[in-house]
Length: 152
Image (cartoon, rainbow, N blue to C red):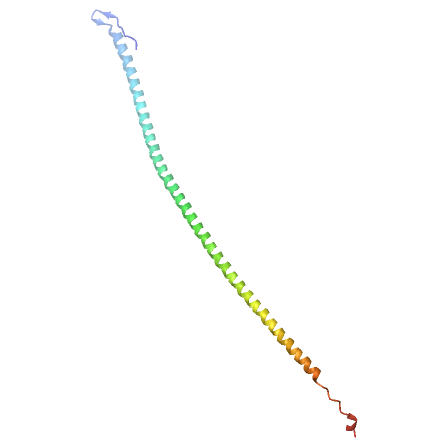
């Protein structure tokens, strides 16, 4: 700011210069007060916006943490359930395979028994056939009676 000087007169400084200077300074002071008030209002508005943003950030951060935790929990539960399903499927497959093997073994045993029985039946039939053949060979057919004698 520049140094202010007034002309001197008989009773002191030039009153018009002083009044003019005081008027300009008063106008400058009023303008500076308006600017200060405007800047103060703007600063308060920005501080309020900053506070609102901090509150929103805090809220969103909390929600994000909750959602991330929920996603982790869901993933953990899904993995656990998948493992249970796989284990159950393996157990079921083992049971099915064991039952199939037991059935196959039983069928093989029955087929083996049938084979043995068939062999025995075949042997008996062969023996019976041989006995019949022998019986037929030893069987003598008597001569046929003369039917001409019956005609009279």
